Amino acid sequence: MKGIRIRLEERGLRASLFDLEADVMDTVWDAGWDRFTVADVHRRLSERRQIAYTTVMTTVARLHDKGLLGRERDGRRYVYRPRLSREAFLQEVTRQVLDHLPAASRRQAVALLVEQVAEADPEELDHLEALIRARRKELGE
Image (tube, rainbow, N blue to C red; front, side):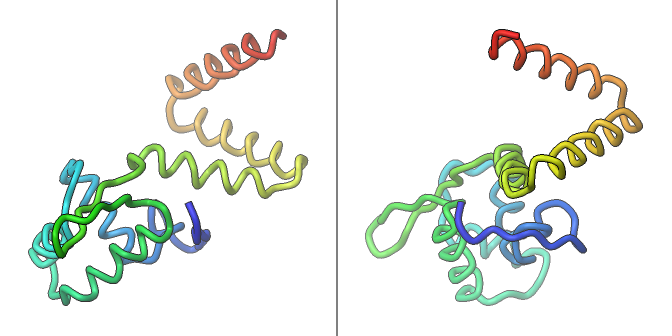
């Protein structure tokens, strides 16, 4: 993925994508499309708001340039496909953020994550513990 940045004032996809990019990806993921055209996205977005076809076309092309969408030629048009699921995308963004933190800050970030998970859902904390055990086993600890 190229060109991903974090906007701390935003949540979810909008923290790492521009608003229309996030809307396009949400549309693709919510529809469950394996393959789609700009016209498909434009039709769905037009149900919620007025938007120009060329604006959608430019945004979809930008998402391709960023590596989030693959595409192939089909006559005069492109047919696109998502390269990542929503979950995989969020994991990748999180990984990129953590990779750019110094080790001490990374430890603090993980500690905050554990704190948030523990407050929100004890089952998630159990899942996190299982992941840690599995990782330690992989490392031979």
